[in-house]
Amino acid sequence: MHELLIVKTAALGDVLRTTSILEGLCERHGPARVTWLTAPGAVDLLRTHPLVSTVLAVDVKSAASVEEAARRLAETRWSRVIALDDEEPLCGIVARLSTESLSGATLDASGKRVYTDDVAPWFDMGLLSRFGKAEADRLKVLNTRSQPALYAAMLGIRMGKPGLVLPAAARAFGAAFRARHALDERRPLVGLNTGAGGRWLSKQLSEERTVELCGALAQALHGRVTFVLLGGEAEQERNRRIREGLARWPAPLAFVDAGTDNALLDFAAIVAGLDLLVTSDSLALHMAVAEDVPVVVFFAPTSAAEIELYGRGEKVVSTAPDYCSYKPDADNTSLTTPRLLAACLRRLEAAPASR
Image 1 (cartoon, helix red, strand yellow):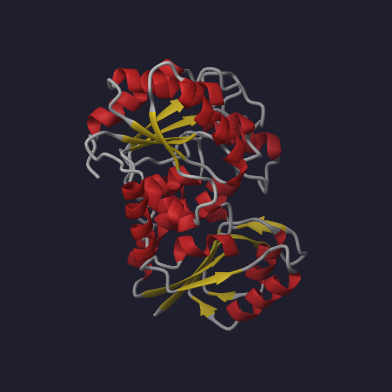
Image 2: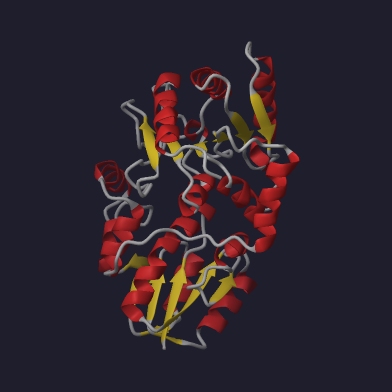
């Protein structure tokens, strides 16, 4: 039995999309037992995956948690370690492990963070890049391959698809949500996840444009559409204002506010019941991809090329000069209502309501 260790802790969306490597790894190294080291908040995204045998949580801000994770992982002689995070505590854990093969970030003999040559196509574009930040940013703009494609090529495996297995309780929550709000299966259910937390304000669609898009889409569909407002705690006030804007729209709009305090897998179950998700580059996007929900995703400060939609979505990309600049104030004004509306209509036509 081959013992495989994956180190990927954050962010939640990155953890979920990285599950695309599991099938390929198990094909190449099978029979294999996979252990995944992740953040406490990401455990639920992994614990039900059939190809993950053990999920181990570590809080990188806690020295005691890091030491305990290192101690437990050091008990195993690993066939392969894949270390995809570059935080110093995690690199320190990896450096202490016994493994036949390492792909990813670790510490060298002097205690400096480094990464192996095989993963250079990814790490060269990141904060740990051996070429410095300016070159890393340039490489990121020039990159044309998605994260799953890059990972597969680096690791010598077939490119796979992210997987999220929702437990029965979460599925039941999703069904109860639809029943509670009497959502009509004969009309499309369109999720709106247009916020982006507090870090990347330019990743989000403005509240006014979100409302305007809903009005335009409802008009195009002769009112036969229901919108679902989605978001996390950081979007509570934003979604309240969007809700008020929808209520004030001249023509009646059918909408439901899903709340901003849903448990992680309950939130995923709501996403899984949609006919279309309009979203920023966020966790909800990766949940939709994992659940085969059609998406329209918009990009301004981050890379559209990195995102793989597996033929189930459409990207609306900023045409501003600072696209993919990773600036929190990147220009997103080219993400216009007509462009977003056209993409939504194409996706709905390609995948009619089928919940």
